[in-house]
Length: 489
Image 1 (cartoon, rainbow, N blue to C red):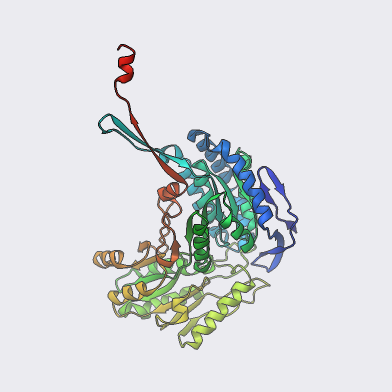
Image 2: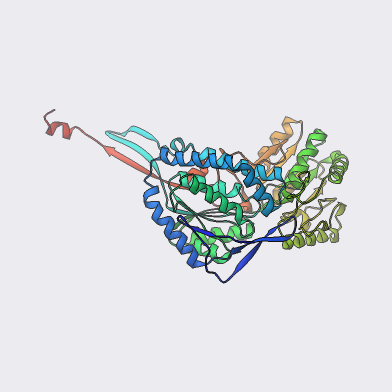
Protein backbone atom coordinates (compact mmCIF):
# COMPACT_ATOMS: atom_id res chain seq x y z
CA UNK A 1 0.00 0.00 0.00
CA UNK A 2 1.43 3.35 -1.05
CA UNK A 3 1.55 6.76 0.59
CA UNK A 4 0.27 9.30 -1.95
CA UNK A 5 2.75 12.18 -2.40
CA UNK A 6 2.24 15.89 -2.95
CA UNK A 7 3.98 17.92 -5.67
CA UNK A 8 5.74 21.23 -4.95
CA UNK A 9 7.52 22.44 -8.08
CA UNK A 10 9.50 19.45 -9.31
CA UNK A 11 9.67 17.72 -5.91
CA UNK A 12 7.39 14.84 -5.02
CA UNK A 13 7.18 14.85 -1.23
CA UNK A 14 5.62 12.66 1.44
CA UNK A 15 4.51 15.39 3.84
CA UNK A 16 4.78 15.13 7.61
CA UNK A 17 1.11 15.42 8.52
CA UNK A 18 -0.85 14.14 11.49
CA UNK A 19 -3.77 12.73 9.51
CA UNK A 20 -4.12 10.28 6.64
CA UNK A 21 -7.22 9.09 4.80
CA UNK A 22 -7.68 5.68 3.16
CA UNK A 23 -8.09 5.24 -0.61
CA UNK A 24 -10.23 2.25 -1.55
CA UNK A 25 -10.88 0.04 -4.51
CA UNK A 26 -14.68 0.46 -4.28
CA UNK A 27 -15.38 -2.79 -6.15
CA UNK A 28 -13.62 -4.81 -3.45
CA UNK A 29 -13.80 -2.58 -0.39
CA UNK A 30 -10.06 -2.93 0.09
CA UNK A 31 -7.64 -0.15 0.98
CA UNK A 32 -5.09 0.44 -1.77
CA UNK A 33 -3.36 3.62 -0.61
CA UNK A 34 -3.46 6.35 1.97
CA UNK A 35 -3.51 10.07 1.26
CA UNK A 36 -2.12 12.86 3.46
CA UNK A 37 -4.62 15.32 4.88
CA UNK A 38 -2.64 18.49 4.21
CA UNK A 39 -3.08 21.80 5.94
CA UNK A 40 -1.94 25.39 5.66
CA UNK A 41 1.79 24.53 5.67
CA UNK A 42 1.56 22.26 2.64
CA UNK A 43 -0.71 24.71 0.82
CA UNK A 44 1.82 27.47 1.50
CA UNK A 45 4.64 25.38 0.00
CA UNK A 46 2.59 24.69 -3.14
CA UNK A 47 1.70 28.38 -3.50
CA UNK A 48 5.33 29.44 -3.19
CA UNK A 49 6.33 26.97 -5.92
CA UNK A 50 3.50 28.18 -8.16
CA UNK A 51 4.27 31.86 -7.52
CA UNK A 52 7.94 31.40 -8.42
CA UNK A 53 7.04 29.58 -11.63
CA UNK A 54 4.49 32.23 -12.64
CA UNK A 55 7.20 34.87 -13.07
CA UNK A 56 8.67 33.01 -16.04
CA UNK A 57 5.69 31.01 -17.29
CA UNK A 58 3.45 34.07 -17.65
CA UNK A 59 6.00 35.60 -20.03
CA UNK A 60 6.40 32.45 -22.12
CA UNK A 61 5.03 33.03 -25.65
CA UNK A 62 1.64 31.48 -26.31
CA UNK A 63 2.95 29.19 -29.11
CA UNK A 64 5.57 27.81 -26.71
CA UNK A 65 2.88 27.14 -24.08
CA UNK A 66 0.79 25.45 -26.76
CA UNK A 67 3.74 23.24 -27.68
CA UNK A 68 3.94 21.99 -24.08
CA UNK A 69 0.20 21.35 -24.18
CA UNK A 70 0.54 19.30 -27.38
CA UNK A 71 3.28 17.26 -25.68
CA UNK A 72 1.00 16.66 -22.69
CA UNK A 73 -1.82 15.53 -24.96
CA UNK A 74 0.54 13.04 -26.61
CA UNK A 75 1.46 11.66 -23.19
CA UNK A 76 -2.21 11.23 -22.30
CA UNK A 77 -2.85 9.35 -25.53
CA UNK A 78 0.18 7.09 -24.99
CA UNK A 79 -0.90 6.26 -21.43
CA UNK A 80 -4.63 6.17 -22.19
CA UNK A 81 -5.30 2.57 -21.15
CA UNK A 82 -3.09 2.85 -18.08
CA UNK A 83 -5.04 5.88 -16.91
CA UNK A 84 -8.38 4.19 -17.59
CA UNK A 85 -7.37 1.15 -15.54
CA UNK A 86 -6.25 3.44 -12.71
CA UNK A 87 -9.61 5.25 -12.70
CA UNK A 88 -11.47 1.93 -12.58
CA UNK A 89 -9.31 0.81 -9.68
CA UNK A 90 -9.78 3.87 -7.45
CA UNK A 91 -13.23 5.02 -8.55
CA UNK A 92 -15.09 1.83 -9.52
CA UNK A 93 -16.25 2.94 -12.96
CA UNK A 94 -16.50 0.34 -15.68
CA UNK A 95 -13.51 0.35 -18.00
CA UNK A 96 -15.62 1.88 -20.76
CA UNK A 97 -16.77 4.67 -18.45
CA UNK A 98 -13.17 5.26 -17.37
CA UNK A 99 -12.11 5.56 -21.00
CA UNK A 100 -14.84 8.15 -21.49
CA UNK A 101 -13.55 10.04 -18.45
CA UNK A 102 -10.10 10.27 -20.03
CA UNK A 103 -11.38 11.00 -23.54
CA UNK A 104 -13.53 13.95 -22.47
CA UNK A 105 -10.56 15.32 -20.54
CA UNK A 106 -8.27 15.02 -23.54
CA UNK A 107 -10.81 17.01 -25.56
CA UNK A 108 -10.21 19.95 -23.21
CA UNK A 109 -6.43 19.60 -23.57
CA UNK A 110 -6.94 19.61 -27.33
CA UNK A 111 -9.00 22.81 -26.99
CA UNK A 112 -6.27 24.39 -24.85
CA UNK A 113 -3.71 23.65 -27.56
CA UNK A 114 -5.38 26.42 -29.57
CA UNK A 115 -4.49 29.08 -27.03
CA UNK A 116 -2.60 31.18 -29.58
CA UNK A 117 -5.93 31.81 -31.29
CA UNK A 118 -8.20 31.69 -28.24
CA UNK A 119 -6.25 34.34 -26.36
CA UNK A 120 -6.04 36.90 -29.15
CA UNK A 121 -7.34 40.36 -28.37
CA UNK A 122 -9.17 42.88 -30.53
CA UNK A 123 -7.98 45.92 -32.46
CA UNK A 124 -9.91 48.94 -33.66
CA UNK A 125 -7.85 51.62 -35.42
CA UNK A 126 -9.15 55.18 -35.29
CA UNK A 127 -11.49 54.43 -32.41
CA UNK A 128 -11.42 58.21 -31.98
CA UNK A 129 -9.61 60.94 -33.90
CA UNK A 130 -5.95 59.90 -33.97
CA UNK A 131 -6.48 57.12 -31.38
CA UNK A 132 -6.18 53.37 -31.88
CA UNK A 133 -7.61 50.81 -29.46
CA UNK A 134 -6.12 47.39 -28.71
CA UNK A 135 -7.22 44.78 -26.17
CA UNK A 136 -5.11 41.96 -24.81
CA UNK A 137 -5.86 39.15 -22.38
CA UNK A 138 -3.24 38.45 -19.72
CA UNK A 139 -2.89 35.67 -17.11
CA UNK A 140 -4.14 36.38 -13.61
CA UNK A 141 -1.62 34.50 -11.43
CA UNK A 142 -1.73 31.39 -9.27
CA UNK A 143 -5.00 29.47 -9.73
CA UNK A 144 -6.37 26.50 -7.80
CA UNK A 145 -8.78 23.69 -8.58
CA UNK A 146 -10.75 21.59 -6.09
CA UNK A 147 -12.14 18.51 -7.81
CA UNK A 148 -14.57 15.68 -6.91
CA UNK A 149 -14.25 11.91 -6.87
CA UNK A 150 -16.66 11.10 -9.67
CA UNK A 151 -14.42 12.10 -12.61
CA UNK A 152 -10.80 11.66 -11.49
CA UNK A 153 -9.38 12.76 -14.85
CA UNK A 154 -12.00 14.76 -16.71
CA UNK A 155 -12.77 17.40 -14.07
CA UNK A 156 -9.11 18.26 -13.28
CA UNK A 157 -8.57 18.43 -17.05
CA UNK A 158 -11.49 20.85 -17.32
CA UNK A 159 -9.41 23.24 -15.26
CA UNK A 160 -5.64 23.18 -15.28
CA UNK A 161 -4.91 22.80 -19.03
CA UNK A 162 -6.84 25.99 -19.86
CA UNK A 163 -5.41 27.87 -16.87
CA UNK A 164 -1.85 26.83 -17.71
CA UNK A 165 -2.25 27.48 -21.44
CA UNK A 166 -3.36 31.03 -20.56
CA UNK A 167 -0.04 31.58 -18.74
CA UNK A 168 -1.12 30.91 -15.15
CA UNK A 169 0.31 28.38 -12.72
CA UNK A 170 -1.95 25.93 -10.93
CA UNK A 171 -2.49 24.05 -7.68
CA UNK A 172 -4.73 20.99 -7.91
CA UNK A 173 -6.48 19.67 -4.79
CA UNK A 174 -8.13 16.43 -5.98
CA UNK A 175 -10.66 14.50 -3.97
CA UNK A 176 -8.94 12.55 -1.23
CA UNK A 177 -10.99 9.56 -2.39
CA UNK A 178 -9.33 9.42 -5.85
CA UNK A 179 -5.86 11.01 -5.65
CA UNK A 180 -3.96 8.46 -7.74
CA UNK A 181 -5.19 9.61 -11.15
CA UNK A 182 -4.37 13.25 -10.36
CA UNK A 183 -0.84 12.29 -9.33
CA UNK A 184 -0.35 10.39 -12.58
CA UNK A 185 -1.63 13.34 -14.63
CA UNK A 186 0.94 15.59 -12.95
CA UNK A 187 3.71 13.07 -13.59
CA UNK A 188 2.82 13.05 -17.27
CA UNK A 189 2.78 16.86 -17.38
CA UNK A 190 6.34 16.96 -16.01
CA UNK A 191 7.39 14.29 -18.51
CA UNK A 192 5.88 16.47 -21.25
CA UNK A 193 8.27 19.27 -20.34
CA UNK A 194 6.07 21.48 -18.19
CA UNK A 195 8.38 23.65 -16.06
CA UNK A 196 8.51 22.89 -12.33
CA UNK A 197 5.88 24.79 -10.38
CA UNK A 198 3.48 25.24 -13.28
CA UNK A 199 1.37 22.39 -11.88
CA UNK A 200 1.40 21.49 -8.19
CA UNK A 201 -0.67 19.05 -6.10
CA UNK A 202 -1.87 19.08 -2.50
CA UNK A 203 -4.31 16.69 -0.86
CA UNK A 204 -6.70 16.94 2.04
CA UNK A 205 -10.11 18.08 3.19
CA UNK A 206 -11.64 21.28 4.47
CA UNK A 207 -8.45 22.59 6.10
CA UNK A 208 -6.60 22.48 2.77
CA UNK A 209 -9.61 23.91 0.90
CA UNK A 210 -10.01 26.84 3.28
CA UNK A 211 -6.27 27.55 3.15
CA UNK A 212 -6.57 27.88 -0.63
CA UNK A 213 -9.71 30.01 -0.39
CA UNK A 214 -8.19 32.43 2.09
CA UNK A 215 -4.61 32.77 0.81
CA UNK A 216 -3.91 36.21 -0.70
CA UNK A 217 -1.69 34.85 -3.47
CA UNK A 218 -4.43 32.69 -5.00
CA UNK A 219 -6.12 34.64 -7.80
CA UNK A 220 -8.86 32.21 -8.83
CA UNK A 221 -10.60 29.09 -7.55
CA UNK A 222 -12.38 26.46 -9.65
CA UNK A 223 -14.59 23.94 -7.88
CA UNK A 224 -16.88 21.01 -8.73
CA UNK A 225 -18.82 19.20 -6.01
CA UNK A 226 -21.99 19.37 -3.95
CA UNK A 227 -24.13 22.51 -3.84
CA UNK A 228 -23.51 22.93 -0.11
CA UNK A 229 -19.73 23.00 -0.55
CA UNK A 230 -19.94 24.98 -3.82
CA UNK A 231 -21.76 27.77 -2.00
CA UNK A 232 -19.14 27.75 0.76
CA UNK A 233 -16.33 27.90 -1.79
CA UNK A 234 -18.01 30.74 -3.66
CA UNK A 235 -18.84 32.86 -0.62
CA UNK A 236 -15.46 32.33 1.07
CA UNK A 237 -13.42 32.79 -2.08
CA UNK A 238 -15.24 35.97 -3.07
CA UNK A 239 -14.91 37.35 0.44
CA UNK A 240 -11.14 36.98 0.04
CA UNK A 241 -11.09 38.74 -3.31
CA UNK A 242 -10.84 35.79 -5.68
CA UNK A 243 -12.50 34.89 -8.91
CA UNK A 244 -14.61 31.79 -8.27
CA UNK A 245 -16.41 29.32 -10.50
CA UNK A 246 -18.18 26.74 -8.33
CA UNK A 247 -20.28 24.01 -9.93
CA UNK A 248 -22.69 22.32 -7.53
CA UNK A 249 -25.23 19.52 -7.46
CA UNK A 250 -28.15 18.69 -9.68
CA UNK A 251 -31.46 16.92 -10.03
CA UNK A 252 -31.60 16.38 -13.78
CA UNK A 253 -34.90 15.62 -15.48
CA UNK A 254 -35.71 13.35 -18.44
CA UNK A 255 -39.11 13.88 -20.08
CA UNK A 256 -40.57 11.15 -22.27
CA UNK A 257 -43.37 12.19 -24.62
CA UNK A 258 -45.88 9.64 -25.99
CA UNK A 259 -44.33 9.90 -29.47
CA UNK A 260 -40.76 9.12 -28.33
CA UNK A 261 -38.92 6.26 -30.06
CA UNK A 262 -39.07 3.52 -27.39
CA UNK A 263 -35.82 1.57 -27.82
CA UNK A 264 -33.49 4.53 -28.33
CA UNK A 265 -35.16 6.35 -25.45
CA UNK A 266 -34.71 3.39 -23.10
CA UNK A 267 -31.03 3.07 -23.96
CA UNK A 268 -30.48 6.78 -23.36
CA UNK A 269 -32.35 6.73 -20.04
CA UNK A 270 -30.41 3.72 -18.77
CA UNK A 271 -27.08 5.30 -19.63
CA UNK A 272 -28.05 8.60 -18.04
CA UNK A 273 -29.49 7.12 -14.84
CA UNK A 274 -27.13 4.24 -14.12
CA UNK A 275 -23.91 5.14 -15.91
CA UNK A 276 -21.10 5.66 -13.37
CA UNK A 277 -23.54 4.21 -10.79
CA UNK A 278 -25.50 7.46 -10.97
CA UNK A 279 -22.55 9.42 -9.55
CA UNK A 280 -22.56 12.21 -12.12
CA UNK A 281 -23.70 15.80 -11.83
CA UNK A 282 -25.35 15.19 -15.22
CA UNK A 283 -27.00 11.90 -14.20
CA UNK A 284 -30.64 11.52 -15.18
CA UNK A 285 -32.36 11.36 -11.79
CA UNK A 286 -36.00 12.22 -12.51
CA UNK A 287 -37.99 10.47 -15.23
CA UNK A 288 -41.20 12.20 -16.25
CA UNK A 289 -43.29 9.98 -18.51
CA UNK A 290 -46.03 12.20 -19.94
CA UNK A 291 -49.60 10.98 -20.28
CA UNK A 292 -50.00 7.53 -21.79
CA UNK A 293 -46.21 7.11 -22.17
CA UNK A 294 -45.96 6.15 -18.49
CA UNK A 295 -46.87 2.45 -18.45
CA UNK A 296 -44.74 1.47 -21.43
CA UNK A 297 -41.79 3.51 -20.17
CA UNK A 298 -41.93 1.87 -16.76
CA UNK A 299 -42.06 -1.62 -18.26
CA UNK A 300 -39.12 -0.98 -20.56
CA UNK A 301 -36.92 0.53 -17.87
CA UNK A 302 -37.73 -2.27 -15.43
CA UNK A 303 -36.84 -4.89 -18.05
CA UNK A 304 -33.59 -3.10 -18.87
CA UNK A 305 -32.65 -3.00 -15.17
CA UNK A 306 -33.24 -6.76 -14.97
CA UNK A 307 -30.62 -7.22 -17.70
CA UNK A 308 -28.06 -4.88 -16.14
CA UNK A 309 -24.87 -6.64 -14.99
CA UNK A 310 -23.60 -5.17 -11.70
CA UNK A 311 -20.16 -6.30 -10.61
CA UNK A 312 -16.50 -5.84 -9.78
CA UNK A 313 -15.36 -3.51 -12.55
CA UNK A 314 -11.69 -4.22 -11.89
CA UNK A 315 -12.23 -7.92 -12.61
CA UNK A 316 -15.32 -8.23 -14.81
CA UNK A 317 -15.05 -6.42 -18.17
CA UNK A 318 -18.68 -7.28 -18.89
CA UNK A 319 -20.02 -5.35 -15.90
CA UNK A 320 -22.51 -2.66 -16.92
CA UNK A 321 -22.44 -0.88 -13.57
CA UNK A 322 -19.96 -0.74 -10.73
CA UNK A 323 -20.07 0.31 -7.08
CA UNK A 324 -20.58 3.67 -5.47
CA UNK A 325 -17.47 5.33 -4.11
CA UNK A 326 -17.46 4.21 -0.46
CA UNK A 327 -19.48 2.69 2.36
CA UNK A 328 -20.73 6.09 3.57
CA UNK A 329 -22.19 6.82 0.13
CA UNK A 330 -23.78 3.39 0.00
CA UNK A 331 -25.47 3.85 3.37
CA UNK A 332 -26.63 7.37 2.50
CA UNK A 333 -28.23 6.16 -0.74
CA UNK A 334 -29.91 3.23 0.99
CA UNK A 335 -31.37 5.62 3.59
CA UNK A 336 -32.81 7.75 0.79
CA UNK A 337 -34.37 4.67 -0.77
CA UNK A 338 -35.95 3.80 2.59
CA UNK A 339 -37.27 7.36 2.74
CA UNK A 340 -38.85 6.94 -0.71
CA UNK A 341 -40.60 3.76 0.43
CA UNK A 342 -41.81 5.51 3.59
CA UNK A 343 -43.26 8.33 1.47
CA UNK A 344 -45.23 5.66 -0.45
CA UNK A 345 -43.53 5.87 -3.80
CA UNK A 346 -43.74 2.50 -5.60
CA UNK A 347 -40.43 0.62 -5.50
CA UNK A 348 -40.36 -1.14 -8.87
CA UNK A 349 -36.81 -2.50 -8.87
CA UNK A 350 -33.74 -2.57 -6.64
CA UNK A 351 -33.52 -0.71 -3.38
CA UNK A 352 -31.00 -2.90 -1.64
CA UNK A 353 -27.33 -3.47 -0.96
CA UNK A 354 -25.79 -5.75 -3.55
CA UNK A 355 -23.85 -8.27 -1.44
CA UNK A 356 -21.13 -8.91 -3.99
CA UNK A 357 -17.69 -9.40 -2.42
CA UNK A 358 -16.92 -6.59 0.03
CA UNK A 359 -17.51 -3.80 -2.45
CA UNK A 360 -19.73 -0.75 -2.08
CA UNK A 361 -22.63 -1.82 -4.27
CA UNK A 362 -26.20 -0.53 -4.48
CA UNK A 363 -28.60 -2.26 -6.83
CA UNK A 364 -30.01 -0.13 -9.69
CA UNK A 365 -33.28 1.23 -8.35
CA UNK A 366 -36.50 2.46 -9.97
CA UNK A 367 -39.34 4.24 -8.17
CA UNK A 368 -42.69 5.03 -9.80
CA UNK A 369 -45.70 7.17 -8.88
CA UNK A 370 -43.58 9.64 -6.96
CA UNK A 371 -44.71 13.19 -6.27
CA UNK A 372 -42.63 16.32 -6.91
CA UNK A 373 -42.52 17.13 -3.18
CA UNK A 374 -41.00 13.78 -2.13
CA UNK A 375 -37.42 13.58 -0.85
CA UNK A 376 -36.41 11.25 -3.68
CA UNK A 377 -37.79 13.75 -6.23
CA UNK A 378 -36.24 16.87 -4.67
CA UNK A 379 -32.81 15.93 -3.33
CA UNK A 380 -29.68 14.96 -5.21
CA UNK A 381 -29.16 11.28 -4.29
CA UNK A 382 -25.94 10.81 -6.29
CA UNK A 383 -26.44 7.12 -6.81
CA UNK A 384 -28.18 4.57 -9.06
CA UNK A 385 -31.73 5.66 -8.19
CA UNK A 386 -34.24 6.74 -10.84
CA UNK A 387 -37.51 8.35 -9.68
CA UNK A 388 -40.48 8.32 -12.05
CA UNK A 389 -43.25 10.96 -12.04
CA UNK A 390 -46.36 11.05 -14.20
CA UNK A 391 -47.26 14.57 -15.40
CA UNK A 392 -50.46 14.97 -17.40
CA UNK A 393 -48.88 16.95 -20.23
CA UNK A 394 -45.74 18.80 -21.27
CA UNK A 395 -46.80 22.02 -19.56
CA UNK A 396 -47.06 20.24 -16.21
CA UNK A 397 -43.74 18.47 -16.79
CA UNK A 398 -42.01 21.81 -17.44
CA UNK A 399 -43.68 23.37 -14.38
CA UNK A 400 -42.47 20.52 -12.15
CA UNK A 401 -38.98 20.75 -13.66
CA UNK A 402 -38.73 24.48 -13.05
CA UNK A 403 -39.71 24.14 -9.39
CA UNK A 404 -36.48 22.24 -8.88
CA UNK A 405 -33.86 24.51 -7.25
CA UNK A 406 -31.08 23.05 -9.37
CA UNK A 407 -30.42 23.88 -12.99
CA UNK A 408 -27.84 21.63 -14.60
CA UNK A 409 -29.53 19.48 -17.22
CA UNK A 410 -32.92 18.54 -18.62
CA UNK A 411 -33.77 16.44 -21.67
CA UNK A 412 -36.82 15.57 -23.72
CA UNK A 413 -37.47 12.52 -25.86
CA UNK A 414 -39.93 13.28 -28.66
CA UNK A 415 -40.46 13.29 -32.40
CA UNK A 416 -42.32 16.60 -32.21
CA UNK A 417 -40.38 19.69 -33.20
CA UNK A 418 -42.98 21.85 -31.49
CA UNK A 419 -42.63 20.01 -28.18
CA UNK A 420 -38.84 20.13 -28.39
CA UNK A 421 -38.87 23.86 -29.13
CA UNK A 422 -41.28 24.65 -26.29
CA UNK A 423 -39.20 22.60 -23.87
CA UNK A 424 -35.87 24.15 -24.91
CA UNK A 425 -37.26 27.68 -24.57
CA UNK A 426 -39.19 27.27 -21.31
CA UNK A 427 -37.10 24.95 -19.15
CA UNK A 428 -34.94 26.65 -16.51
CA UNK A 429 -31.55 25.00 -16.76
CA UNK A 430 -28.26 25.58 -18.52
CA UNK A 431 -27.86 22.37 -20.55
CA UNK A 432 -30.75 20.99 -22.58
CA UNK A 433 -30.97 17.76 -24.56
CA UNK A 434 -33.37 16.77 -27.30
CA UNK A 435 -33.30 12.98 -27.74
CA UNK A 436 -29.94 13.06 -25.91
CA UNK A 437 -29.67 11.34 -22.54
CA UNK A 438 -26.77 13.34 -21.08
CA UNK A 439 -26.54 16.88 -22.53
CA UNK A 440 -23.00 17.51 -21.27
CA UNK A 441 -21.31 19.86 -23.76
CA UNK A 442 -18.11 19.16 -25.65
CA UNK A 443 -14.93 21.03 -24.72
CA UNK A 444 -15.54 23.98 -27.07
CA UNK A 445 -18.69 24.91 -25.11
CA UNK A 446 -19.03 25.95 -21.46
CA UNK A 447 -20.47 23.54 -18.90
CA UNK A 448 -23.38 25.85 -18.20
CA UNK A 449 -25.13 25.03 -14.94
CA UNK A 450 -27.79 27.47 -13.70
CA UNK A 451 -29.55 28.29 -10.44
CA UNK A 452 -28.17 26.35 -7.45
CA UNK A 453 -26.11 24.15 -9.74
CA UNK A 454 -23.57 26.94 -10.25
CA UNK A 455 -22.16 29.88 -8.32
CA UNK A 456 -20.23 32.46 -10.32
CA UNK A 457 -20.34 34.14 -13.71
CA UNK A 458 -17.93 32.29 -16.02
CA UNK A 459 -18.23 28.51 -16.34
CA UNK A 460 -15.60 25.85 -16.91
CA UNK A 461 -14.63 24.79 -20.44
CA UNK A 462 -14.85 26.71 -23.70
CA UNK A 463 -14.25 30.39 -24.23
CA UNK A 464 -15.76 31.14 -20.81
CA UNK A 465 -12.91 29.12 -19.30
CA UNK A 466 -10.33 31.23 -21.18
CA UNK A 467 -12.03 34.42 -19.99
CA UNK A 468 -12.11 33.15 -16.40
CA UNK A 469 -8.35 32.50 -16.33
CA UNK A 470 -7.38 35.81 -17.98
CA UNK A 471 -8.07 39.50 -17.51
CA UNK A 472 -8.45 42.07 -20.24
CA UNK A 473 -6.25 45.11 -20.75
CA UNK A 474 -7.23 47.92 -23.11
CA UNK A 475 -4.50 50.12 -24.63
CA UNK A 476 -5.45 53.44 -26.25
CA UNK A 477 -2.68 55.01 -28.35
CA UNK A 478 -2.49 58.45 -29.93
CA UNK A 479 0.22 59.14 -32.50
CA UNK A 480 0.07 62.54 -34.19
CA UNK A 481 2.45 64.24 -36.61
CA UNK A 482 4.49 66.09 -33.98
CA UNK A 483 7.37 63.60 -34.13
CA UNK A 484 7.40 63.77 -37.91
CA UNK A 485 7.65 67.58 -37.74
CA UNK A 486 10.56 67.52 -35.27
CA UNK A 487 12.45 65.28 -37.66
CA UNK A 488 11.80 67.61 -40.58
CA UNK A 489 9.66 65.09 -42.44
